[in-house]
Image 1 (cartoon, rainbow, N blue to C red):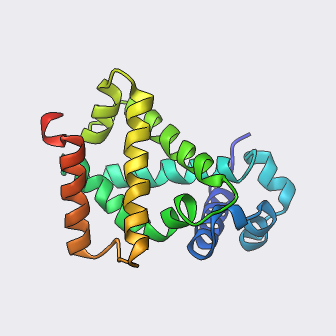
Image 2 (image 1 turned 90 degrees about the vertical axis):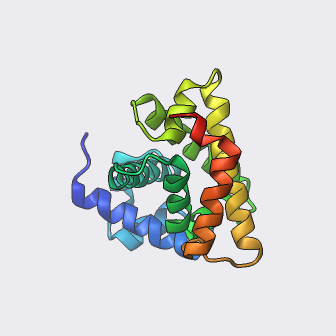
Image 3 (image 1 turned 60 degrees about the vertical axis):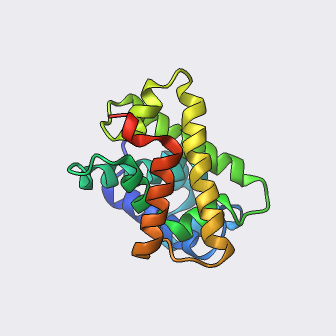
Length: 183
């Protein structure tokens, strides 16, 4: 059954707002539904759980970012902007939760990276993942780097959107993944 665009946007907005305030472990489907003004049964008509919704959100965010970055071939810049734009969300997905949802959140991001890489995306990071001997391991490496960067940002309450921080993240990612070699 296809989800209505309004329902999808309402649920994604609700999840996004909740992730701005608390970790994924603390968020319940009931909270998402209350914030979206949608009945719980409607949620389960479209999603199996909050991580299914999260996967849709991550895919949409990555697709929008890649569409906006069509003229920018540097994958490190795309990833840096993704981290800068979603620092607080990533912090609540990958760093602050204590219920063991870190691994599940990282798996969602990893799966999204693999899906986009195999869709033929031309961004250097996704080409690198697609062309790797072990694409799933390379996707984990990329999502692990994002987790480490978010932890670094959190350690001193750095602003991921700050241009100087963005440049540092971009340079680090370019160096780490040798993006210039993967055209």
